[in-house]
Image (cartoon, rainbow, N blue to C red; front, top):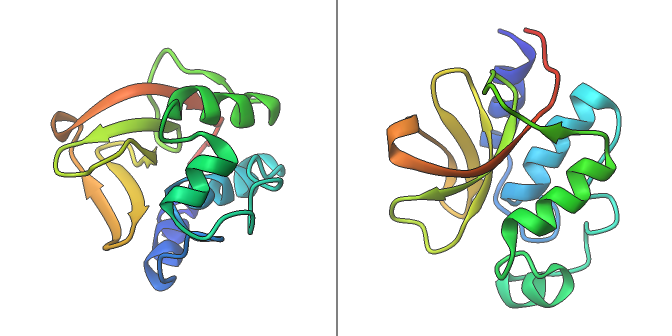
Length: 136
């Protein structure tokens, strides 16, 4: 099993938690594993639900901008060719809000209140993505 799938299995074993195990924090964990820096370090444990997340970060008003600020400060750059391990902000059919996810090479994976889920590329709209530099 490669590092990416090992990380996704770790996500599956964790219950969703707004304070430390939501879509953005799980993606930040992946970035930390690959790049050695946690882009969400300043945000962890600063909110406990969707409303306080919005107040603390503004994520639901500007998910791309909020995510970009953190991952670009961690050294990631906007991607131009999607590769396994890259991260992005997605609109997913059936979800109320944009989500942060990681591309597996064939699908997008994300952590949500209903667990860790994958969707095919034709089931999501990628708002923006960043290259993590993962080399399986």
